[in-house]
Image 1 (cartoon, helix red, strand yellow):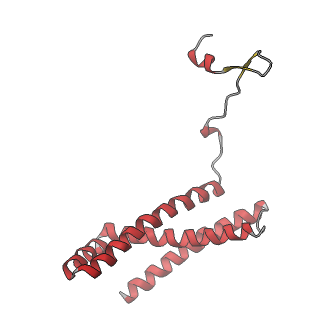
Image 2: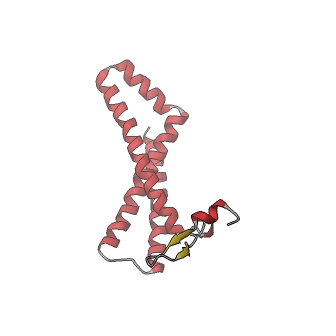
Image 3: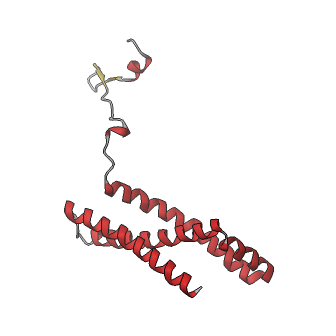
Length: 143
């Protein structure tokens, strides 16, 4: 054996003879497709919803505590980083909702053809972006 890694590739079959284990392909050998990205984004937005809910909880507790605490939270939420967090939370909410509806359709046995699940992915992504922008436009007009 020329390399220590070669020793790790050797195993014994059930009859006791030595065999070489197959190598798994490297992660970079796979092509990243749209549905994989949506699956990862669904998980990330779920995490974002949890973090955004902590921000909402902080805001509610501050509102119930005192005017000074509420002013502190309002100052943070009104800052650029706070507005960015709120925007991300809004997108996470709508993406998780739209992609969740897509998953419910799959649970009903609908949309398993390749063209259908790709189209539903684009619809979920576009709808979440459109709903996020719409809510922020309405919110900024009212605010």
